[in-house]
Image (cartoon, rainbow over the protein chains, first blue to last red):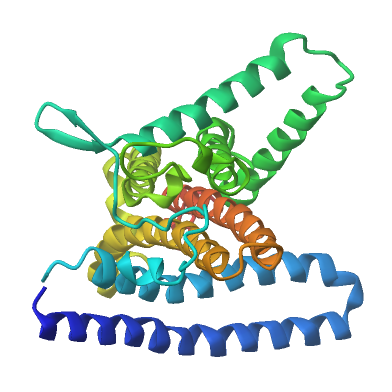
Length: 81
Length: 253
């Protein structure tokens, strides 16, 4: 592999995961905080809130996973190698 | 993976981390990933045996294994009912159930079964859903399913969905048809592969005990991913069959 392409790919992979983790991190924090508040206000709704929270957390996590997929492609299946 | 073999200086007999190495089978001009087929067949066989065993002697008051399978059935049925709606969900229960059970058992098989004890000439056995081809196939089947659901319910009127609620939505709805399978497949593939990679890297660093909590977390996320895939498939199907009461102007009411 061309060393410039290799260096650029490694950097890009790191950026893809790193930057991709920011948004979902904020989103998951918000969602979890609101869920805790919801449970504190209405403890009897805990089961329902927990189920919805887990499902939506997984959706947010998927966004980081997209970044991870791009990073993995760059590292192990680089189309420019 | 030269980078990661550096981390294993003592050459301990650990699972090697291999990404992008496949056990190729040649079928005419096609190269197929043999290890994925082997594990998928195993999962399919497992599910078949389980369903046959559970339905061989059906009792009115279920006990033991039949009980467990009935619980799974009820779970899938309520999932489909929640997403598709009381009226239409019945014919879609087998489809949603197949998706859920196949993905669930595949994900867990990757974590729970000692696949690494079986050596292949190339590549290694792992969860079939950790291969992009499997997840894309599942996602495309889901796409076909919701198109079929829409067309069989409304005929060509299904295209009316694309200009609901405003005609301005048309390009977005069209793009959505492509992003739905894309995000479905990438979400599942990425999550399963990430789980296996994280556990693999941690096993390379600390072989004993420390990876265990992460493995448990992996089991949890894999189960959630199976649930999400099935829920989304059901939601897309329900969306395709949805009636738009706002446009009807008293047709239904």
